[in-house]
Amino acid sequence: MTRSNRFNGLFVATVVTCAGCDQQPPAMPTPTMPTQTSQVAPITTPQRQPLHVGGRVVDSANNPVPGARVTQWDSSNTTITDANGAFDVTATITAQDRSFWVTVEKSGFETSELNRSVDTAANTSLRLHEIRNLAAGESLRAAVNPDDSACGYHWGFVCRRVRITLESSGTLTLEVVSDGRLGMPVGPVGFPQPLERRISVPVKAGSEVSVDVATDGPFSASSEFTLNTSLMPAS
Image (cartoon, rainbow, N blue to C red; front, top):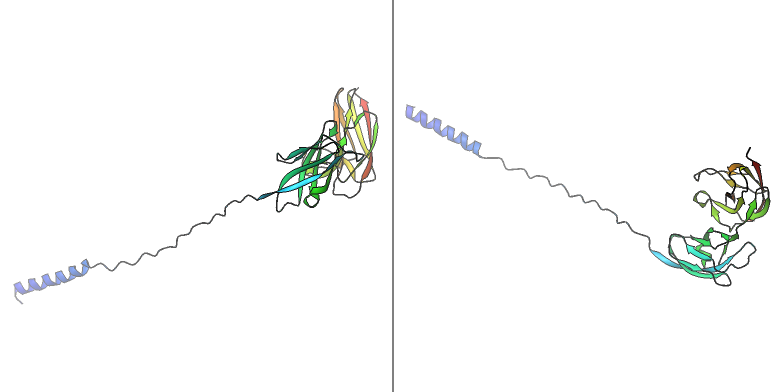
């Protein structure tokens, strides 16, 4: 091979090699990941529907109480009883509700917080008790009824309220005497909140102490009790 032919052969070989380097392998397709969309369930507000509530407001002796205000909790649904203690009001509930709460109030009576069944809403009885005041040293005989006001933590008790007026300072002792499971809710409002049959509290002259005599319902019959009070004067 002449010098010229050797050069030409080398050039061709070089061209072939470079031509091969210029050819890029076909690009592999990039896998496509499926797009994930998070489905957020919409927050739905339970549909409310009207409920006719009617009946009478009565006192401790089952006498009608005219001029009492009946209000459904957390609403503007309210009405006033007529001369016969009768009332009609439209409450609002959800389809899942099996009961509803009302507040019943009138001057001279203890306010009642009452829970009633949806099934008997059209013919329901709501009870108010007259305010009872005792002087220290006096006793009271009364009863807690199943349809009395709720009280205590999360309205877990059914109760009667009694008020004791103090003419002098000292230590007031209250004692509940009953055959039933009655007592006085004590301590800060919280769970559990115990019922005590005897408590003593410091008091000042001219003050008033309100005490709830309660039972941890539900219960089906009235439970009678005697509330005894005594005052040890301050030394």
